[in-house]
Amino acid sequence: MNWFLKKFYELSLDEFHDILQLRIDIFVVEQNCPYPELDSKDKLAFHFFCKNKEGKIIAYTRFFKAGDYYTEAALGRVVVHAAYRNKKIGVQLLEKTLLEMEKILGKVIIKIGAQTHLKQFYGSFNFQQIGVEYIEDGIPHIYMIKRS
Image 1 (cartoon, rainbow, N blue to C red):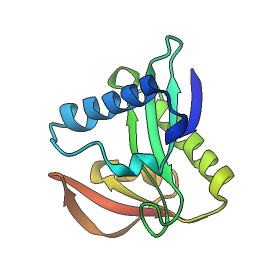
Image 2: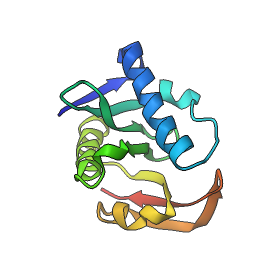
Image 3: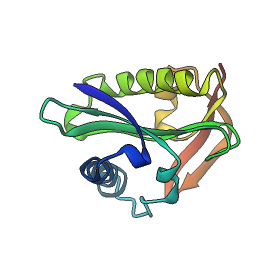
């Protein structure tokens, strides 16, 4: 597996297409949640992803410097292809994303809007819930932060 970190303008058309396809396959189709997946935030984000040996994108997240999404630095759209779940790819994705964020942004507070059922997963990376549960696109979410 190969890991890549790119800004929007560095992504090839094929990479951007495959990222959107993965995000839509999971967040819209698998979770049966129609919402506008494509947003203007992609142009501001750092895109971090993993390709398998065939060159297919199997894991992805995007992150932002403070002020580009939330007041704090942010990460989101954390996704692993269904065929690669239960192989610790999600753990690797978060570990590596957090390392890349620290390299680029330094030691900063990171905020996420997490699906509530993933609270324990993000908690294992020292994210802590702030505020109360809310509904986004019909799915329960919570805000969480990670302090340096």
